[in-house]
Image (tube, rainbow, N blue to C red):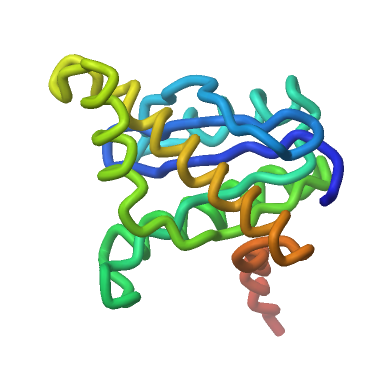
Length: 165
């Protein structure tokens, strides 16, 4: 198991849940819920700040496939968010990985219900809990397989400028 704090990220339309691991990669715990900034990059800036503050060695972003393992509009949104985050974190040397997160929100809602929390009152907590589920799954997979989970996010190359003659 690699050593170092990892962040888990659950990308939603309105909010982004963030979780962290301990340095030994054993346990995921909630950190915060970041408001989604669809028109800018305040959400990316905040997550990059959390990663820097915690000296994160990696960020795990949940990839919401449907139950048949197919892509959906949410899949494309999370993948695009992960690419933008990877570009932002590249200068700090923090890689971003995408990990299958089917049913993470459903699992988080069930856990909160069992704890006596009402869904309407705990939407931001659900986002953090989903990030915990995503990250804990990734940690467990890495421990079982001895390799990093999911797949690394490639940083998109900037478009080449056209040369004029």
